[in-house]
Every structure is written in C-alpha cells, then in structure tokens.
Image 1 (spheres, rainbow, N blue to C red):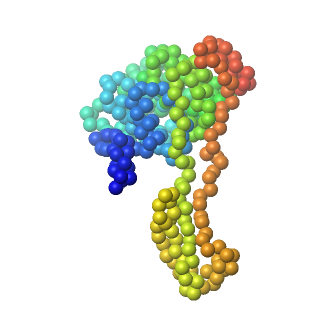
Image 2: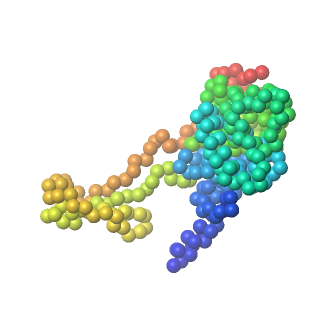
Image 3: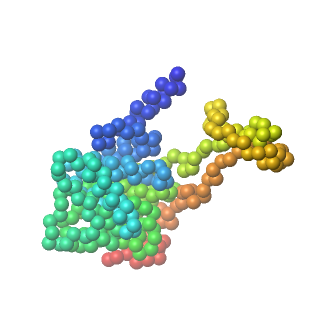
Length: 304
C-alpha cells in the first residue's frame, strides 16, 4: 500500500496540463518542462525515445498561445527535418487554436518587402535562416531551438550555424536558447562556443533500451510444453505465455542442460554519448579568441 501511495504521489507531481488535458510526463520530460517554463537556457542530451521533442513542441505551442507577439527560430540541419518538424507543429497548433488567431509555421525565407507575422515559428536550416537575417534587419527571436546541435562541429555548415546563432543573439541577447542533441558528453561546449555562462547542461538519465527479461521454463518434456515468464526487477515472474512446441524441440533443449533460457535486449553502442571536438576556453574570454581556437580545431575559416 505504501509503495502504491508513493507511486501515485510521484505520478501526480509529474502531471502537467497540455491543451486543457492532464498529461503524465516521465521524470526527464518533467524536468525539461519545468526548466523550459522557467525560461532557462539549456543544452539537452537525450535519445529520441526520451520524448524531448514532444515536450519542446508543446512548450512552444503554449508560449505562442500566451503572447500577442512571439517569434521562434527552430534550426534543423536537413530539409527532411524541416518537413517533419513543421508538420508536427502545424498539427499541434491547429489542435490548440481556439481564439482564431493565426500562428504561422514558416519554412522558407520571407521576401524583404513582406511584413513578418507577429507570432510565428521559423523552421529552417542555418542557410535559410541566414537569408532571413540578411533580408530582414529587424528580424529577431524570443526563443531559439537548435536541433541536432552536435552538427555545429561539422565543417563549414557548423561554422555557418555558429555565425547565425551569434547574429540572432546579437539582435536579441535575452532570447531563450535550447540545444538538443541525441548524445553528447561535454554539453558545456555550446555555452562556451557562444561566450555564454548561463547555458545549463541537462543530460538524460533515461534508459535507451528496454530492460525486460523473459524466462523460458520447460514444464512438461513429454508434451513439449514451455512457459514464458516476464521477469522484472524486484517483482515475482509473471506468466505471459504457455505453448506446446512438441517432444523433439524440448528434448533438444534438455540435451543442452539449459533449464531456463533468458532473452534480453542488446545495448547498442551507437547510443553512447560522444564528445564534441572543440577545445575548452574560458566562458569569460573574448569571442575573437574563442573563434581562433575553434578555427584551429576545425581547420576552417570563419565568415567575416
């Protein structure tokens, strides 16, 4: 009973209201949601399965609903991600819109003679966002999202992404900023690259693979009956299936002298966090010194 009460209490503490509906978040999702609502600048490392996109997009929808003016730059590295993210945001914003006010999701640079919308999400690559900045000197943002942020260390496109971020922060120094990456150990590198000391690293402690174990027990060698049990830590095995495989199959299993066969998922090494190859510099150092160090590391020239 005590365990049940504790679990109910934890569940209630992780419940938030999204579009007038109560939603139970995971521990990681709730920590992320809380920090976003508090307008913290974050560098998040979490696998795709952690659900960071769900939290982030619902946070953006909430902010766009609340204010008369709100501009978001959502930077992604590929056109495929532009399509995916913009589609998800349009669906979410359409479901939330109740006052008839328009919230635009913009995926291509707006021509210089056109008036920019007061509430919009600009889902673009760094190349498209560079054109936006060139065509609209007054364009600035309230929130900046950098998806697949580890690409900032990848050659000339990474250098351009760095330049775009510096330009956006130069126009709106108080912009909320979030870097999202599937697995980076040295999350502090993003703040150092931009000379920012208030970007909080937020690694995920969520498991990247399932941890369900199955135990197979031979119940009757004569009929070839086996039973499959789900084994969870700290709990009694739970019967989930019983099958008759035939005498020959079970005899072969017995001849191996394996009374129980345990099947478990293999942990993928691709989900292990990696470190960005960018040298450590003091967050209080000048941007020119930081640029010079990064230039030596990446072997590229920064745009002038």
